[in-house]
Each structure stands twice: as C-alpha cells, then as structure tokens.
Image (cartoon, rainbow, N blue to C red; front, side):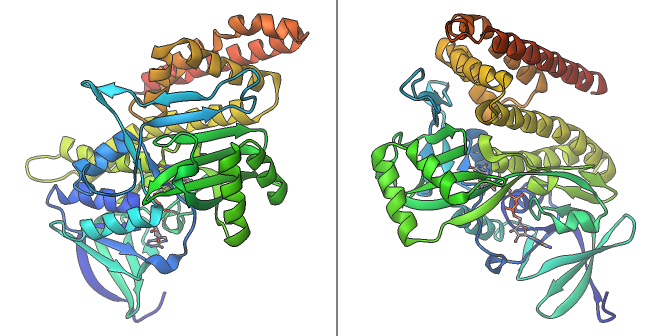
Length: 452
Ligand SMILES: Cc1cc2nc3c(=O)[nH]c(=O)nc-3n(C[C@H](O)[C@H](O)[C@H](O)COP(=O)(O)OP(=O)(O)OC[C@H]3O[C@@H](n4cnc5c(N)ncnc54)[C@H](O)[C@@H]3O)c2cc1C
C-alpha cells in the first residue's frame, strides 16, 4: 500500500459496489438512520449482459425501499414464464406459467434494461438521507484481520475509511471478498450472448419466453421502449456459431429472422454463467450481499430478487437485534448469515435441479424433465407452487423438497410411454436415481430444520 494513503473518514456503512445489491442495501440501511458511503467504479467498468427480468417479490422490495415506483414508465411488465420444451409440437405444448393473482389482481414483475435499471436506482439512492456516493472510485484493499478498514482509490489518491460495517456488493467475481480472505467454490457452466430486437417478434409478449434445447437455454423478453432482449447460452467447450444456429432452429420463424438480421449487423453482448459459493457470507465487520454473496445459473432469473432480499434481511436483522438505541452489528450479521444461507440454498438447489433436468441427457434427467412438464400440465396448484419457488416468493427448502417429491411421483404416469418406446430399463434406472435424490432433499431439509 502507498504511504500517501490518508485517514479521512469514519462512516457507519461502507458499500463496495453501486449496482442492485449495493444500492438496495444502502436504501434499506438509510431508513435506519445510518450514514452510508457507496463506492462505485462507474460505467467505465464495462458493459456486460446481466439481469433484467425481476420477479414480483424483487419489484415489491425495490418499491418498498423507495428505489422504484410501480407507476414509473420503466421497463416492461412480466406476468410469468412461457416455457418452450425442446420437443415442442411433438409431445409437448408451450407451458405458460403466470405468477398468479393476489387479492384478485394479476401479480407481475418487470424487465428493465440492466444499465438503465442500475442508473435509475443509483440516481434515486443519492437523494436518500445519510447516503453518499463516490463514483469513479473502487475499494482496493481491506486492512487488518477484522475488524477491517477499507482502502478506497479515487482520482485524487487513496483514502483509508473506517466503517462499523463493510459490505461487499461487487458482483460474482468479487475482489473485495478476496481482500477479506473469504474463499469460494466456483463452477463455470457456460457463456451467454445477447442481442436486442423489436419486441413485436416475441411469441408471448408480457412473459419471459424460455426456450429449452440440448445446447442450452435461450431467453426472450421485452425490456421496454419496444425492445426485447434475446439471450443464448453457449455451453463450455461448445462452438458458439453452431450453438447459436441450434438455438435459432428452436425459435418461431419471425423471431429467428429478426435475431439473425440483428446478429449480422451488431456485436452481441456477452457474460459468463457461474455457480459461486463463498465459504461464509460474514467475517468480522464485513458481509457479502448480492452476487458477491453467491450466484447460480441464471435459469430462474432470480439474482436481482435475491439481492433485494439480502438488503431487506440485513435491515430486518439490524432492527431485530437492536439493544436500546444501539445497533448490535455482530448479532445482526449472524442473523443475516443464517437467514440468507437458507434462502440461497433453496435458490441454488432449484437452479441446479432445473438446469440438470433441462440440459442433461441421462435417463434420470430426461425422466425428471418429463415429470416437471407432466406436473405443470396436470396441476394448477403445482404451477402455482413452482412459480412461488422460482420467483422467491417461497424460499423454503421444505417446500422445494415437497415439490420435488410431488414432481417425481409423475414417473408412474409416464411409465406407459417409456414401455411403448421399449425403455423400461432406463425408466427404472431414472426412477431409482430420482427417488434417491428426493430422499437427499428431505435429508437436507431436515438437517436445516434441526440447525435452525
Ligand atoms: C447472463 C445473465 C443473465 C441474468 N439474468 C438475470 C435475470 O433475468 N434476472 C435476475 O434477477 N438476475 C439475472 N442475472 C443475475 C443478475 O445479473 C445479478 O444477480 C445482479 O446483477 C447482481 O447484482 P450485484 O449488485 O450483486 O452485482 P453486479 O450487478 O455485478 O454489480 C457489482 C458492482 O460492483 C462494482 N465493483 C466492482 N469492483 C468493485 C470494487 N473493487 N469496489 C467497488 N465497487 C466495485 C461494479 O462496478 C458493479 O457496479 C443474470 C446474470 C447473468 C450473467
């Protein structure tokens, strides 16, 4: 570290990262009268493909925090998912899964172009009591073994900032997490490429269109101003051109032509899909929120909603553990880590299971894929429960374990078709593996219940 680093500031909360997680946390904690400093490198950080579709609990949270208003002319309403299976038209129809209703009203989320969302909420939070931002700066070191002091690099040099709480909200590849000595497990699944086209080509406007096929998942949804985002997954070691060709072959003709034309004229945006699990989310006066806290495959489009939930849980934990008029940061962070740990386990497990079911070609995965569609086709309650889990309205591992078991019971409905196709042995193999997995789920749920 340079010698010219100056000790300048003492704040209650220093937040590294001014995207969704950092801004949501700042908004949540400002309501508690804390003084907060957000450090954000700014747009020069580079434009990448990132989250845009936000589930109803995420939008409700952003509205509760005062970062969005339901009547803002921003983005495009999302009523749920329209899922196109790879065998569309042969054995399966497109499955439309609405979020459902609450008090007689259609529940909806929003899809907003990522950079626009980030700009709007960062601009909003700057008007909140006790919140300041330094844009064009970054956290470059955490000093000490805990409690940590942050070193911030700005255009004018380095400053050492002391804070009661330091939040790492600097995304999945968090450097601040590393600075705090928090290790993590990383699995890189795939890459993602995305373009923008006119939203009139979407097969189901107002829904997140998800196309499943053996080379990965593709998404298409309106993001406002008459535009739609189209994203394709490119699996590790796969040829990008071939993958995109296969993805396009699963699209309806009008959509395919529009995407082909766009790709001939523009360079797509890109991103990588990871599963990242840090060893801990809390260390001394340091905590992780948002993708820095852990991320999974974007199949369930739940990263932003999870980041907003992290902020709300942190706020509630500070309130729940307050003694008189003093915040007990240690107790609050322990509570935060416990509750977020459960929530992220459910979210990650759901994304993993769906990814396996939709992409893997083993008998168990093929059977699970069919069971999921059979469950959705035959049970209105099942569709409702699935959407509650997907949208993080319900983040209980017990619900996930229960739903998994109900899905798996559909193996018996599917038996006749597997017998007709002379695949009885594969069916038996798949059934065995799915029931073992289901038992593992119940065990995870019970272990978590005992720990709680
Ligand atoms: C291809 C793809 C599609 C996705 N689709 C969806 C979707 O449809 N819906 C959904 O909910 N989620 C989706 N996600 C996930 C979503 O993008 C993330 O969950 C969300 O952006 C996380 O926000 P964050 O604030 O935690 O991190 P980020 O958005 O990554 O922001 C991190 C911030 O930290 C700043 N920063 C970096 N280094 C430093 C430093 N040293 N000091 C200070 N600041 C720093 C960066 O400039 C940035 O502003 C998708 C992700 C991918 C990759």
